[in-house]
Image 1 (cartoon, rainbow, N blue to C red):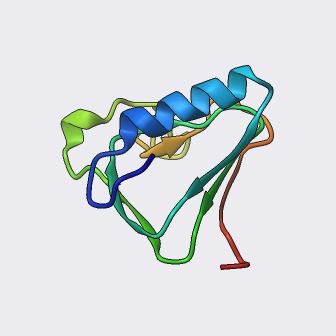
Image 2: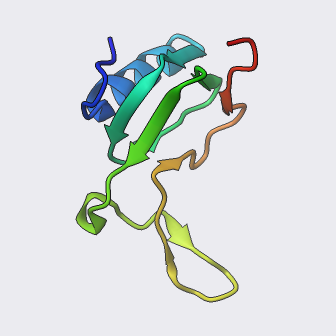
Length: 97
């Protein structure tokens, strides 16, 4: 499903959307280096990174859009992985690998 050294944004976001629509689930990112543009986590999604998995966010500012404001400095906030309005999301590294 995920191919090393490729942009996995569309594949990952599609999988997140499908699992969320089905009530939630777990996504396992296998070892490798993967580039991605911003993704939206949704409720009841557990995103696991296997040992040796590395996600590299796009360095291009134009790939991002503001997701809110930092209340202390009132500047736009950008994020590579965000979960606006989501509940029970769990990005984590697997400990059993």
